[in-house]
Image (cartoon, rainbow, N blue to C red; front, side):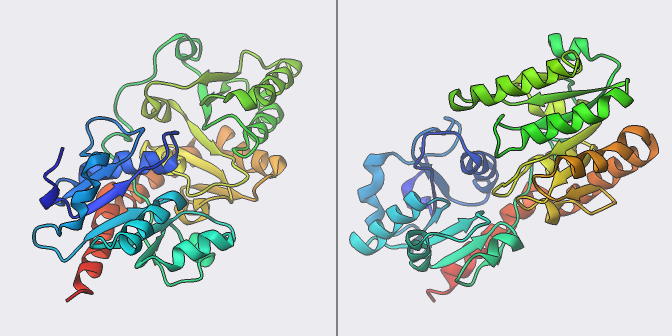
Length: 350
């Protein structure tokens, strides 16, 4: 439990369900806490994070040491609403910051909440284009110590079954939005002509997507590729699989931001992705990988094919991707840019 008087930024997480927002908070806050009084608030977060308790909320009427107010850094509608209630309804000394990753037109309710923010950050230029208020772009970064080419490799029956084989990887929840079916269709089209390659999907299917996943398995078995297109489920160490992948494919039909291409490139792996999320802003076309229209399994297969047959091309893209991520997308860069947003808010009060 951090000292409340020293806590100058609050990162609320008001949904228990694991999501990209939760992952962002889990990765960012420990690094932010090295140089900033920051605490989380809400359920579903690991115990090692600095946390406020619900009973600490009345203490937010007091100002923090050395700052005119605390910053409430919201990333979802419920957190924006809670901040508005605390600042405007209960008159607590807070300023509200919202980070938007959405790449769609916002509802009237969301637009109203955003209009009540003191500052807004967008995670990509595409996200910023959907906002009706000024916003600064602060793109996500990743932990380049966790995601790197050297380190442990996956273990277990699937890893043993694939020993010595090249692997095309795909990671994420198994569902239509994530384009798992597009990946499977591309693999069914390509693998018969590339006998030394197999494919692995990591991630689970929730109960409402079990029939979708079962349909994919039937499609794979019908193509006679049941031993070459494998579903690994949720894995303990996804970084190990990114190292093991020889090529990574990110096929979502739509996405908020999407960290997996960065995680793959940081692991030295070439990437083929759909034009969803921030992928076009993450991947250097033709250098670190390829970006194709979202929802098009044929275009995905055409982009993947050269990497399966040209080792030099694939390895060069992996090397370029590693350099690109380390130079432009380390988590430390995101922390520094967010700190400058906080400082600008505090300076505006003087």
